[in-house]
Length: 346
Image (cartoon, rainbow, N blue to C red; front, side, top):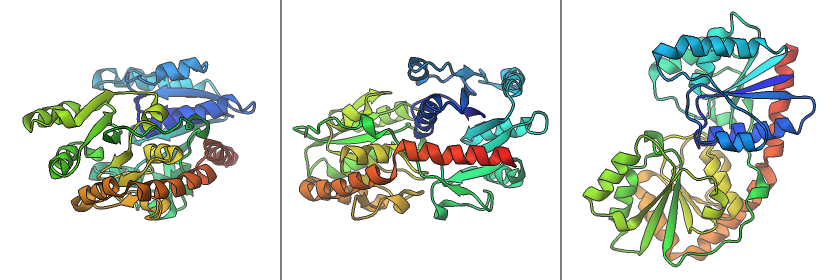
């Protein structure tokens, strides 16, 4: 069995990290060979793959001008191996495999990674191409949408728990971590409003980890409001466990989500979490283990944590136990392997 992990790019998001972890598991499995293919030239995670002996293949599709050449390259990659399963992560990966499905034999396992698709056109495209997908994977039963297959498979995300054992060191200044792509979905501009609502009540700062097209607008807005002292930008980082060991809490004010890897990482570190209850988050994260709050009250929940940090740590300890029991990458990989094997039999 040959598995192609296909994704838009190798930036630092949760989907990309899942591809990395699944590939790592593939390498330890003698019955599975694997390839990693990414559509664009975004390759921040490429060195991590190369360190474990995998050379990801870029199709170099960055515009309409090189679309056909990239599609042709992908066609030859699929054709090289029999019994091929393409695990398509995110919309564009499925779109590319969808185009080749009639011309070269392969099975498609699709993980959307979000419980909401903003574009109506994409939603209808996913609906009318359901027959071209062999399996849709969702994170929880309640997260299925009308444009996904009627019988999707539920597989929760997982992380490599062995990485999250750094000792927690409480910072002198209460420090909030915002971790994720700086894009509309993650709602980074809200951070400015958050600071404005709390800056006269508490001493704190926000560490921003990640890159994206909204970094510059966020920095500009911070400068306009003269709030630079409340923010620290670290950019793209790979030492997430160490960063989490030196902050006070994780804040996730997302507008929509799937099942964020960052929340599992915070859970593994025993880090208190404040998040909006979007996507599959309320399915795997309870009020007993974190603070789930709508945006209008987000600042109040953060303010509560600042004043009741021992309570927040108790919640975090409960979620940490759940993460170690339920969200190990080994369990996640075994579930995906069963799906890969199943689709090849049909």
